[in-house]
Image (cartoon, rainbow, N blue to C red; front, side, top):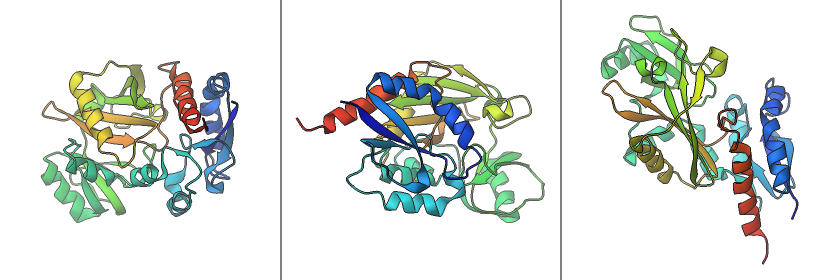
Length: 284
């Protein structure tokens, strides 16, 4: 049966709306092949009339947090949102890392609070490093993310997360494991350019396909099992600590890039997972 899929996109007037539309393009044909039509919908307009709603391209929520969380809180129970609203809200603030650590998921050492001169100076000693990364607890795409060396003057940042800068970001890189429909889909290795600590393409990061090890998969599955709701899609980002062990850097369940340029089968895999959910919801 044909179905309409509302795709939450950047809110009205967002400067990244055009870029999001380009990024969405590869998914249209895959969904059409599965009998579904994607209809872009600004996330600040709330639910549409489609069979289900995907939040995969809800870019810009981190700059309008109150509106984003109000939209999630008001989401009607009879409108299917993927990922579930409870998971999207939980994943909005990076303090979710503390919840995952409490569930025995090894995370990158992190301190949460207001980043001022005193707290940053203390973090150097706490983590035993000479460089830190400071970013907002609600952010995306390295938004307002700073690299700070020991002895530097700090620009205060409220509601921050402070972490050690890890040398592996420019070596082995960040290791991303992507799950679709509850199953492993594919994985990517993301390496920062020399002298850079951000791995996003706009900062010159190099992305390649990667085959995850057993220990990497174990951490990823443990993290997924600790989520407040099962995700349709999720990206688990790992990184190598100074002691050689892997740790969770981030778990993105709101609007992760699924890297279809690395695996061309991603759009079809996502479409199949959405189609299965719709078909299960149809009256027998």
